[in-house]
Length: 342
DNA sequence: AATACGGGGTG
DNA sequence: CACCCAGTATT
Image 1 (cartoon, rainbow, N blue to C red):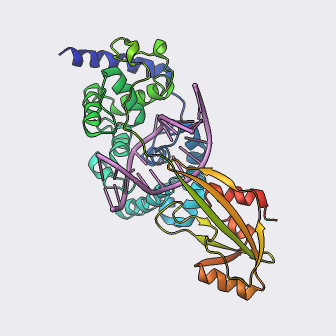
Image 2 (cartoon, protein in one colour):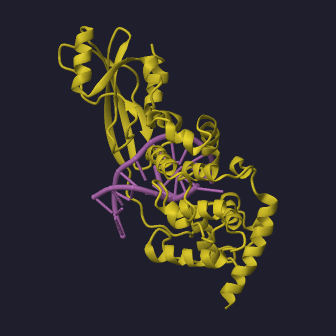
Image 3 (cartoon, rainbow, N blue to C red):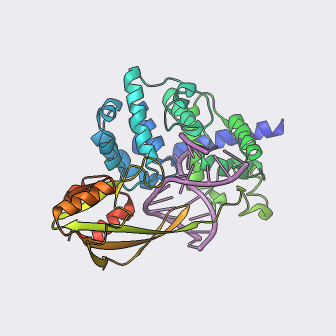
């Protein structure tokens, strides 16, 4: 079949290109199952450049899965601070304890798939890169490269489109070097077959690319389903204090900023002295929400009242510098920076 | 199948 | 502003 023949040719061109253009990413230097796993979790929905410093930090703080398992969840969350999708940190930590209890890393795609925080993409990436298992890893890069090359018009985030991409990715896979091949496709997506203004002239597989050779398809693929509109959310945080102490809360286990430290949304009772807005409102953008955050300041009449309020909101009384040691989402660090511990 | 889940980069 | 990023878990 001609498609299959083209797939073989594309694989070879890609291999040659990757040998010359692979980035010097630290987890590729002295590959380990742990380092690969860590990189894959860190890079979920996160650009390589953004995840890079966190990989170094984690390798320093938690050099092995055992170190990670023996650390507390709060230590791991603190290390993850600022990166977002904090569930990844708690699942990574949880997984490290499962692996530590088992005494060894999972040794197949199927086994990795059972690990918390590891889905089809991550399991395929780890199994191919770390174990040499012949499974095609399909991430956003691969969806883009494959849908353009094969001219897949169905939305890649729908069932049929995803299946079509998977079929081509499977046909491309180099069974002799699956890890190398998977990384090559992703690298091509990151460096050449970019979301906008792809460098088709530099592309090693443009010869049989449906999109590159048909101007009508430029800027069209990959097709995606329509996204929901971003919701607006007005958020008021109450910064309640007495002398050097404030009240902070750890957010619930589910929802935005799960388990991260922030400020109560419940105002204190009327015998606290209202200070009005402590700082200018902040517009904070998440993928699915546009947050308008307002910060109300209050002075407690005495320490006991502050402690009573903390109890009411299930929070803790602490100093600013104590709060700084807890894991905070970006919005809280913005508050911290603005008030600078006063 | 749809939705929740962060934050930063980019045109 | 809109779209994207080495996606996964939950409903």
